[in-house]
Amino acid sequence: MQPSTFYYGKHVLVTGSTGLIGANLIQELARRGASVRATLHVKDPVVENENVSYVRCDLTRAEDCIRVVEGMDYAFLCAANTSGAYTIETNPLVHVTDNLIMNVKMLEATADVDRCLFISSSTVYPPVDYPVKEAEAFLGDPHPSYFGSAWMKRYSEKLAQFHSERYGRKIIVVRPTNVYGPFDKFDFGTSHVLPALIRRAVEKQNPFEVWGDGSAVRDFVYVSDMVEAMLRAMERWTHFEPYNIGSGNPVTIRESLEMILRLAQHQGAEVIYDASKPTTIPVRRVDLTKAREELGFQARFSLEEGLQKTIEWYCSHRGV
Image 1 (cartoon, rainbow, N blue to C red):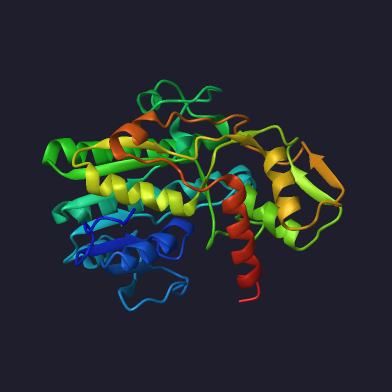
Image 2: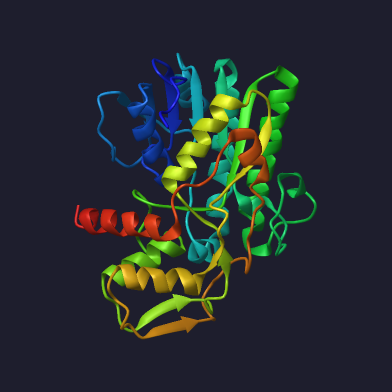
């Protein structure tokens, strides 16, 4: 099915353009004919396209936020400090202060933008083992390992809701599960679980260390599916609503590792599970009914397909 022309000729801002979601989003927006303005902070561009212009800025500064928003029709707020279990355990504030400041200032700066989308997280939910629905986000504290970052996201969501309901703005919120794919972080200090496992498998590490006992359950969604969900949400919804975004096929870390080892041709590795290393919530499942019924969204990529594409991308880019 051909994508709609909703973005054709529009001026679209994407913050966080070097991150996993931002980099893939600007590629798809450019493909759909949008004129994209993408923000940079420290890193250099990772995507080159004639429809994409870059602006270097510090989104914790109000004047920079106002500057990058000027003249934009739509804004996708993707900028964030992100990392995995190790950083969450050793330096949890790294996900709180700067992210909160960026979110507050960007929501203010986008007051005159026609539509705005904010990326929240499934970490906002309390620790339950069933598929959690959007309305359950504030029914209890988040899992202790996410406490700081999840409350930052919760506050940012409520601020987005305030802007929407008080000032009549079109602001959409998406709550993704674990997103993975090309342009992810593969350094062990900041990576999430899948890119860390992929790197170890491609490097043929043996013995092969895995943090935790492998029983944790996650819903991994390939980044192209995440981008499609975001584009649909921006186009189809015009008032504040949160949407769960995921694959709908949760798996254990052990199951995903077995698939990675097979795809990377490293099945003979001696796998050692280390339950003493930092891990996060044991089970996370999300209910995707709302996104399916209201956005017409359903993930297209299986975990195996997504992992294969990610491994191929990493193998071709790890020396770059």
